[in-house]
Image (cartoon, rainbow, N blue to C red; front, side):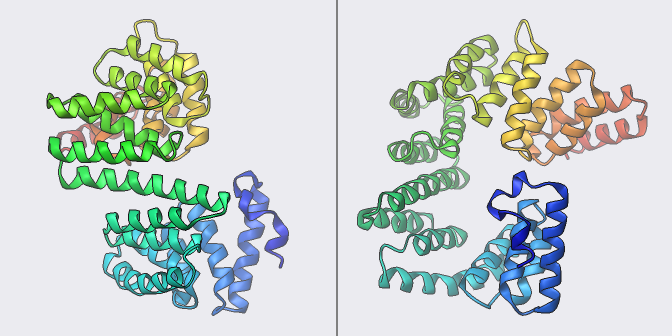
Length: 361
């Protein structure tokens, strides 16, 4: 009760530091008083997941992992995230049977359907997960339930499309991925995860000369909303070195999408790398993107490079170090970090970055 009195846990991001400490303290006391009660453990685990302390969240919840369906489900997702694959698979197999029975009893049980799909993705049965959600749309009668299922199905198709590329990076694999994304666009064309996935796929397609692939990519861009098309075309242009052209497309797209992190980030990148860079404006856009997605390494890398160009090296280092979480960004980041460390009088750190760069790490 004391933990619940602290504030609305659904609005955790707006809490003060004292609220967070009190919430943590009261939940810890509750767990000490009733160590086998799953409720305070789930609440504390949610808090720890919210601050990206996944190991702490797992340690909190695993002692009661089999207490009830909700707790087992959360534990399974954490095990998958932490790389405890065999444990996650073992629990997932049990959950699969439970969720399947729940849906058979009540086909309109949206929560059971979305969780069942998540478990199927965990065991790499993407097409089955998509089918479960598609079947849910057929039987859904409530508009709110329909919207939940449409969003879940869109994101499921995004995951499936990405995994198609992971398994087959040939033109044929990319064609299949683009086709799946085209189907997703018909469901939820403004979904941010889908927008980023379409952009990634179009970037991959822009590197290929396969005729069918080019046609499908163009059809996908033509089929989306104009703002989305400008976002995609602008991102492709930047990737191909046509920065000023890319900026023009992104300036059009941002007029109706002022809070989209990927768009803010790409425009910040374009403005800071154009023929006449406006670093102050680029920084404002990068700040706005990071407010939406604070832990995204690509966003941190963009802002870090802007700080680097502005000579604000301590701030650049802070962002670039966090951006190292994305392996594909590391070569460029390590070059900037080495220079930044040298400039602030830390030659040993600079040397370390160059050694890691040579070793491809």
